[in-house]
Length: 122
Image (cartoon, rainbow, N blue to C red):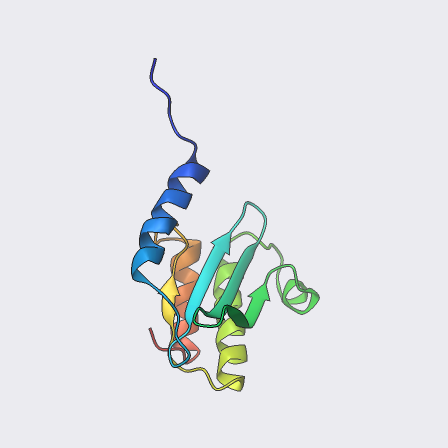
């Protein structure tokens, strides 16, 4: 009998492989993305000290007020601009992109592209 791993288990395994090669420094922190069925979350993390420098998600009231739905490509694109603006206000211009084991297409790609357009470099 063949046992098939769940999508979550596969994603976590991919994320562990990616994290072996990526880490955020003080000069170039890590932009971590997580996507659930209903919301998206983005954090900019300094891994040397283990602190979250900037965070944004579609759960926030300011972000939800601008969106009709919180789980589509448009919401991801808006979240990318929000996280980029907050990062630039803190003086963060370059980051390392951590896709969290998710495939780089759709919502994850929309978030990354809009963050680049808003001024983040990665």
